[in-house]
Amino acid sequence: MTERETITVADVSAGPAGDGTDPGTTVSLPAVEILTGRGFITGKSGSGKSNTASVVVEKLLSANFPVLVVDTDGEYYGLKEQFEILHVGADEECDIQVSPEHAEKIASLALEQNVPIILDVSGYLDESEAKSLLLQTTRHLFAKEKKLKKPFLMLVEECHEYIPEGGGMDETGKMLIKVGKRGRKHGLGIVGISQRPADVKKDFITQCDWLVWHRLTWRNDTKVVKRILGKEYSDAIEDMGDGEGFLVTDWSESIRRVQFRRKTTFDAGATPGLDDFERPDLKSVSGDLVDELRSISDEKERRESELADLRQELEKKENRITKLERELEEARDLRRFADQMAQAMFQKAEAPYRGGKGRNLDRPDERQRALGEYEAGESDAGAETATDEQDGQRSESTTTDADAEAAVNAAASADPDAEVPFPLSTDPEMTDTAGSANGTSAGPAEFAPVESDTDSPPERFDITSPPLPEGDVGEVAGDLRAELAEFDAVTRRMLAHYQSQGIADPVTAQVAAGGPGDHKVAYARNRTLRKAGFVRHAGRGKYAYALPDHVRTEYAHRLHPDAFDEAVEAVEAVFVEADAPSDAADGESTDDVETAAD
Image (cartoon, rainbow, N blue to C red; front, side, top):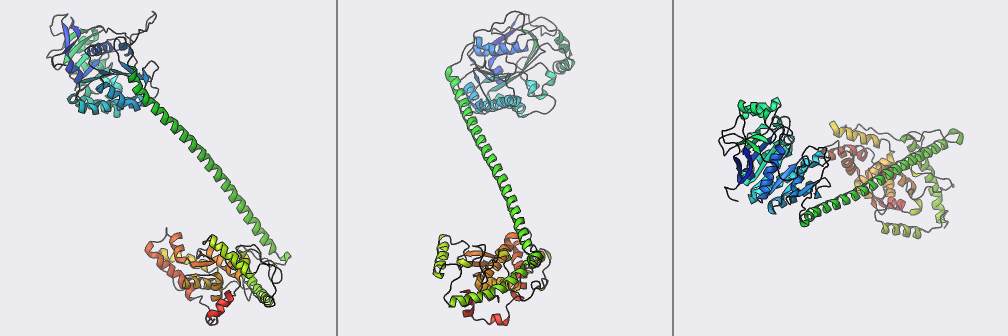
């Protein structure tokens, strides 16, 4: 293409506001200015603006200059009557249906393979999809033209829908304005077409290199003509004939009144008449071009299919989760019901008419009192059992000590962290009942009686001495001291033993605390400490002191990390000092403790 190459589109017409040129004089436009410049064609419906745009396109295509037409009404497919032009959009009449995923390929075909394209956005039910397709296509055209710098024209029908004068402008409109302002230096030209110049953003109109003003009658539109061209032209424009208009160009000093020629291809935008409509034979584009776009469509369908499968799988998993949550809630309801039934049975067993004392076992002090009564009975039963063992007698269990120890060791080897106390036959956590010397059942470990000389409540101690620190540390320590106050003195001394030794077994801890060497009672007390979080299972029947870890885990939201140790010390102050064993207990030899434990 040379700088002097032109396209002939109109002839000078007679009438008011002409420049004096003889009517019938041909009007030609420089091709390079049309391809790379900014144009605006306007006129009311039926005035000939779409015909003018089609004539410009036909002339450019005849000279082998590629263009891209953004067709908002589906009226440009008639160009295919003479030209091999790729028609893409959402309708079945298009060569192929496209989406925003095809935008880059469309731009590549237009610029790199010189394929003229009709981007038909009239068939999209979702307006946002049509705008997204136009936005992405324009972006890729602009980006590719920065490198190619190839003269290329983009025509946009009904441009007031994208670059309105009033109201906000979306990303598509901003991109078109960007092409209007900066596209020329890259070789990318743009022509806006609208029947309402008053509704088109004036920043775009004032940037245009060439303009065509067809007939306008609405007052607001003629005001625009008066402001841009002058009163003479605004008065004359209302009486212009079809296809007639004022041509304004930067490369001509005058404003010419011209009559644009008729398009030679099928006029798909003509108003339907009573005559039969005959669709012309349209030229087909290369199958290879369609195949390139179809491969993108196939890939999109594959991704959508995979996405649908994933959504279906996700829905199944969500339904499964919902079902499991419902089953879990039902299981919790059953557990609560079982707990209530068990509690009711224990309350009934304590009823006076069944020989009980009518105590409320829901209260911790009542449970501790019952535990003390049981310990006293177990101590006597233990003595009788020891006598029987000296006589070579066995209890109800026929398992030998060696067998029991072997079973415990085997369980510990299988799972070192399993909670397996020794000996196995007396572990309250491994069996529900254990026969005493007189053949009675001890019941669950939580309610197993513990040695007590009187029916008085468990020994209390002053939880306020030594004084509590101030602030959150004092509140946390006070809560834990109050929890310790619910334990009997032996249980608190067991905790002190754990604190001093780090790791110990429950029987040794109970003996060190001044209690008996009874396994069942020791593990019952130990379970109280474990449930409170003060000790944790360390494996092979051993338990570790866990108060510091308990404070860090349970009160992290209330205490600063630097205050953890202070809170632990404030709690330990009431059981390490206050609940130290008596002199008699302290005087017990290590051999005595180990003998009791064994």
